[in-house]
Image 1 (cartoon, chains in turn purple, green):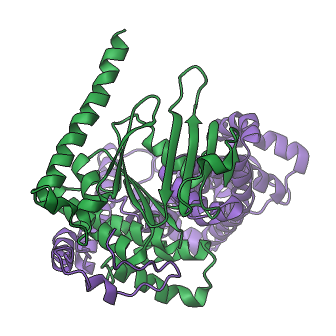
Image 2: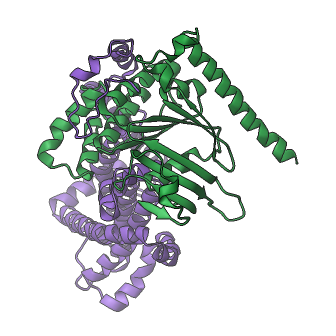
Image 3: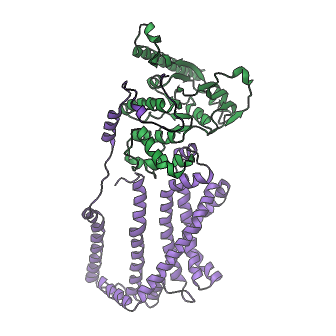
Length: 307
Length: 275
């Protein structure tokens, strides 16, 4: 043991003392050089690059699809009420926007989808944490939750109509039955996939009980949780459209699914396609504007994304 | 933490007064029938010592550290270690990927009960101690393996524990980085005066770092031999001059001796498995 070593357990670490020993141990310069060699610089993209790699390709693909559609309609020339071309559908969309049907249906469905999804998040998150903490509960209800996730939630529509009648409660019930199992399962798999080393590090640092849950388990399970949220939203939206399509009338408001059902009833393919395209568009927009950036940011911050 | 299932007369077996860690007749069996991982292990470590624990894979080195850290209970014998537990460093640093380097160190301070107002300065001090004052805002994946280990070291030091356990912290690093970090650990040991237990399977690393080198046998793990390298490293000790060898020669010879003994110990398993 070197003779002139002074224990400083009280925490006052003097950096002056570190250079005291000049006997080849002071390798600050070598270390600094190594750090510089091994550090990776962050790469940032310009707006033009983002446009070229992210925005342009899907726009081009979409335009191409519409052109093929128009071309097929022009060549085959089907009955416009059975297979309308993009121009007729465009006219129908413009008319539905002008008379307020489409914006109204869109607003009704979006509100239901989002509020139902938020309620599902509020129910599923604590439920998942509880199940994860308690092994007995997990082995009891785990298979049931997985089963519910596989069960198409539209299967609940008849039961919901019997219980709640033709009211908004029916629609919300179906949405919750679709979204909650997905979010719970996403979070559970997020917790399962936490590297054991991180949990050990947390315990060594003195995190116990709820501090371990809040400071280590929750943030570590984030990627799985967000994947579960994303899937939960998709299930919410699908379940909602299924419910609106089947349960019509009563006190249920007029949503996109109802518009779809209306188009079928009056055998107007332009209305049907207007509704289908709107439902698709909402799905794409929510994904692109919300979940995609959230997920990318999360994964990139942890070095889990190559690009 | 103190588990006593096999109480020995305290006066008879009590070694030097300043022992921070004392293991007596320690045994650990995970699955009954599989045989013990550790058995009859006696070890006493004085305050401020740097102990290198050497053993082949499967010698229960990590289990031993877990027991000392209080993460696992022994199935036999007694452990006495600081009640507050021990700080620990891992092979892969174990930094939290969602926190920056600075926040990783700060979380250790927070969990150790340091008030918020004092944390920022302390984080900076600790990062300066491991010579990484500039990386506080970087995420772990933006750092090299060696830098991550130094942040891990800063985080372990943030805990203000008397004992620092290091579980093969450099075994995944390249040779150049490992050489430099070995000297960094020695420097930080001298500055902070911590008691360090360092696990390795690299004989020269053990000889270079440890004042004591302990050789652990495998299945069951127990300490089969111990070498004291302290006198050869202390600049105030002239012991090695009398032997007519230089310090380097002496340490090289010790490395060869220990390597030979380690191979003997591993070879014993080949013979015993054939019978």
